[in-house]
Length: 337
Image (cartoon, rainbow, N blue to C red):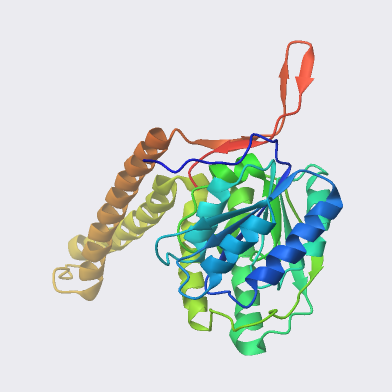
């Protein structure tokens, strides 16, 4: 039997989503401060805390907090699936017109949520908090983060300087995103690639309230692969044939030039071509060009089939006019990211 959502049908303005893994030292204070900050805004809200298969007392503390704070929705995953999948589960469980993504260790101040929400109301689809005054390790956290953010800006054209961490985004867009593992770090770029307006504002970074970080330098390697994958997806407007086709055409042009030169020397100067290295290189380029073009066609067909299956569209609707009425609607996105 599917789980029944016992929450009422109150229209939720803001959903605060926080994935957690073994955060028993932070969870009680996180819920207390977040609920207090949101109540101060005077708008209907919910706090969606996702326990990512925690093995400590996180689950127990969340259950107790849910009895004390009716605005808390606790989601418990059956096993540890990673931060991105836990965040994805929390976003899908959210109901808010605005979704705020934050960490459960209080490195992002709940009292700053109103800043992101206010900026979002100015017409943006996503607002990211640029962490200022970070106290984390320079070599294992801050420098790799700067490199990753620079690569993302270069590959996607999204000008947000700090892609990870604290952010607010339109709830409809958030719930339409299909987040692959690792893509929680790339939300601004994903929204930008789909045509959504993004913005950024400075947010004071706090040290962890308690406990130790679950991430180290090894995560930077995973980030590089995620960036490369996203860069490929954004290349030539997500048309694989455009990318691989251009590579194949360039290789074929080089092949034609080399073979023309070899044939000229063969028939004009009687120079043997079969044993010369340029001939072998030309053959290799020709085979590679055919293989590259074949990959482009196959990926194009797979991409088209995937979009058809998921009924995805490569755009975000910002506004809609019908007859003599103009109705501003929440941006909806239905596209393959």
